[in-house]
Image (cartoon, rainbow, N blue to C red; front, side, top):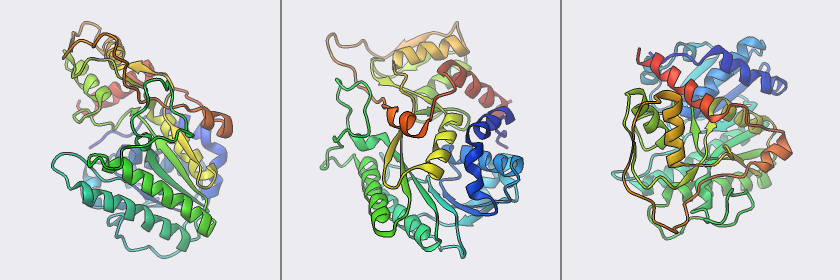
Length: 346
């Protein structure tokens, strides 16, 4: 069974969002993507807030296979305030009754061995269907978790990409399905806001770290932590020069809840950290925090004079308009993540 999230970290989320939760007092929330990385933090923090603040709220959680999820999930996911609905975002049967809010955090998988056309279709239809539910159920708020992928390749001379950046992925690139689906879904959010007066807000999410982040897929920080926990070596697959930034998952939860309850209609906000570091620097940070004696292996040397690729957001809009902040630094984020994963495998 998956370990529960630490009470201290859930308290940190509630302390920063306490004034927002009354919007759910005695109400229902509908959420997709509750079985993923984002969802684990959203559902556990919902349960925690419901208990600590006596909200009397309920969350209806859409899942393709609720029984399989609950077999492996933490004990907190069996709280009676969580009601699981079997189905897929693009085709689920609408539950009866009113929902105060709808949070659409599910996404399809893309890449080798997958039907990217079908994934694109399901992503866009899933967003439309959850928007239709929000309208029918009289929801006061709707949040779509989009991605920084909507910007396409970040220019090397743009250190932190802002929401006003008008670039995008190449429309004729058959590998851009994920980014194109997110762009189409954002359009639907804005269009429904204009047509129905729905307060549909948009979170453009970047890169994250924390408990529940998989260590065995193509996330550099997860792979580095896995290797460091095993004693090394830490393997960098490229030249180590691309720049990334990482937000800790408790900050992610605070930002998503804030956007759900307070985000303006149709207005996107970058969600992530603006503390940029290269992949090589990230590897050294993981080694220093987890396994100081571990060796770092790098596949190839940087090309002299070549500008480094970047995927780093500006978060000035969220800070200035919504008062959001980063509260967990990267060394702490790595240490907390490793401690949770070690508990999971102990």
